[in-house]
Length: 134
Image 1 (cartoon, rainbow, N blue to C red):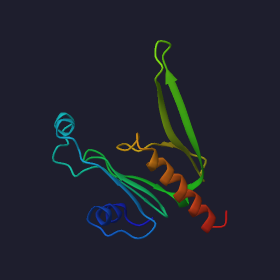
Image 2: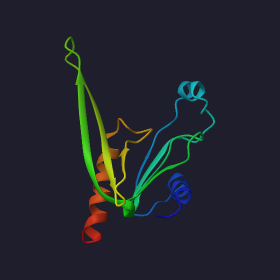
Image 3: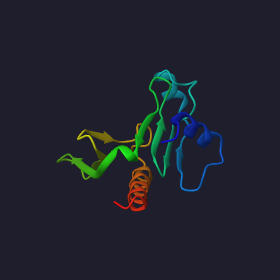
Image 4: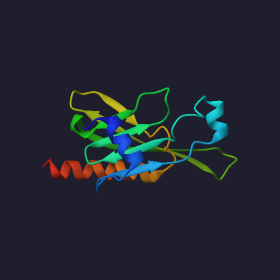
């Protein structure tokens, strides 16, 4: 995969290549102040044809998923409700299965409530697999 910092810089300052999906949002001033990130750039998730790169804050390095390292993925969904409520909390993530037998859980740090991010990841993975003949 291309250098993650280059991907984030290009997505932040544009224009981006066709096939990239870019998710961004403003960091809330109160939240940024409480978490010590008020001077950080806004969160950014970039899904490319080769993988995903996410910047959450300066306290963590960019999270990178390179599709060439993966043997497969599985969508996971869990719902939780309480007996006295009609509301259901839904949690969505993707299990990553690596060629070396390792496993990891992918859920965007900043866009976990945006189902379009999960959909974009799945679509990019599917296109990657189709183009590689697997």
